[in-house]
Image 1 (cartoon, helix red, strand yellow):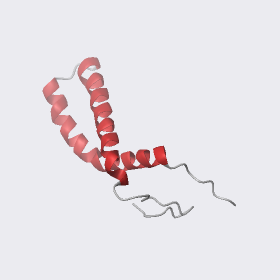
Image 2 (tube, rainbow, N blue to C red):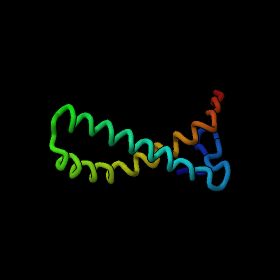
Image 3 (cartoon, rainbow, N blue to C red):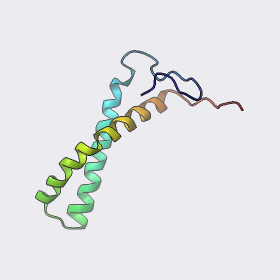
Image 4 (cartoon, rainbow, N blue to C red):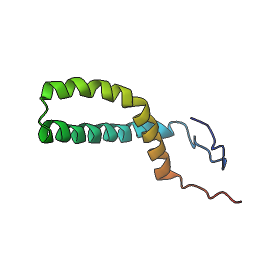
Length: 87
């Protein structure tokens, strides 16, 4: 992740440990994903729970970088409003 925005120069590291709490946001994303896929595959499509869990673990591992960046971006957007670029 860049220290500053390449377009507007916004500081992406406002203070040390700023993104520490984004792990809770990441946990929320994992929970929502797990519950959503559980209800779709196990409850609605009637997939066996063992098959669901075998498929869930690799997808969570593959989605870790995406959820990590999404959580940091969400946490940053909660506290820092984007500045409009002039011109």
